[in-house]
Amino acid sequence: MRPFAKQFRLKAGLQTASTMSTPLPTGRHFLQIPGPANVPDRVLRAMAQPLIDHRGPEFSELTRSILERLQIVFSTSGPVIVYPASGHGAWEAALTNTLSPGDKVLAFENGQFATKWSQVAENLRLSVDLVSGDWRRGVDNAVLAEKLASDRNHEIKAVIAVHTETSTGVTNAIGDIRSTMDRTGHPALLMVDAVSSLATTEYRHDEWAVDVTVSASQKGLLLPPGLSFNAISEKALRASEQAKLTNSYWNWKPILSFNERGFFPYTPATSLLFGLDASLGMLLEEGLENVSARHARLAEATRRAVHAWGLEVQCSESQCHANSVTGVRMPLDHDADTLRKTVLDRFNMSLGKGLGKVEGRLFRIGHLGDFNELMLAATLSGVEMGFGLTGVPHQTGGVQAALEFLVASC
Image (cartoon, rainbow, N blue to C red; front, side, top):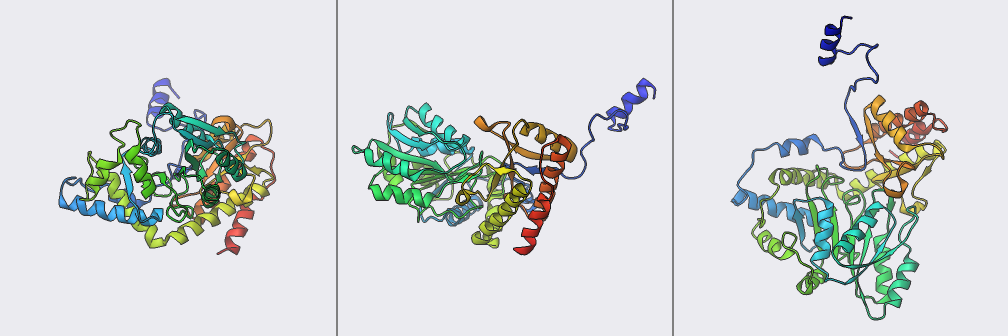
């Protein structure tokens, strides 16, 4: 082929076998990271609506409806605040609305996001007691009890925990954490990150007496990134009256005041709210119990595939396995990012990378949101083929093990 003809074919996307280094992607992209998750067509169509006046009656009605249904999803009778922000913003909002400079916070380092939340607290001039962990287990309630019992002057003002740690696939039993706090009689606030668990796993803000629940839009809530949430208890609202950390944008008080009339004190993310209106409709139509059961079933099928491959999941405690994400540990001397790159290049599928101190040691399979059995079967097939292409030692039959479980549990 003459040079100018080859150049034309490359520009036109008409590569020949001799000029191609990797296959061009075909078919749909499989986004199997643990968030942002796939967005359903119904939500995408809702977001494509023309904008409306965010100070008008139609918007007020939309906001009221959204806030009422968010209470159902969080399982709370208290207020839920919506921010145009990522989960990191909602972390900061939870802390700045309830605490004062120098207040002591007890946190547990069982993953990347638990660690990052504690770093946000440190940046806000809070004193953080971070209990180290191996990133394979949940919060140790014996350590929690010991820390609280020894705090006779009640210097600890808040306990912060992540419900499902996205970086590892470990889910903490928040009800047990609350029971431990109650047994010690400690008055600290309980703050929980439910970014990866809300609308994938049973969550009970009121029943577990959580004071602030933090979540975000891009996972179980079926939306793109861009919205985050604080669900707030009466105790947290009382604490906000005494809090001395500086905030303005994150301040609950003006937002709650505007929300009473169906509005916000800032320009809201109207298109994302259109999408949230649609996604809440989808979740409640399916039923939250059914949503959790679907996620639990697909997560168990994923773990059965991993075990059939002869590999380990990152979470080493069966009672802590996550519904939304599974971390898969690589054999020694094999790099998870090499596998991920091969799977992306050859099969147009994205897997989650290992974060922080497990970078390169594991990859993560997201199985959350708008997700079903056939999507899982394709995902696991891509992983198993990737093992073969990269020479990862494994046993065959992981996909079959998952399919057998799915058939038996129908």
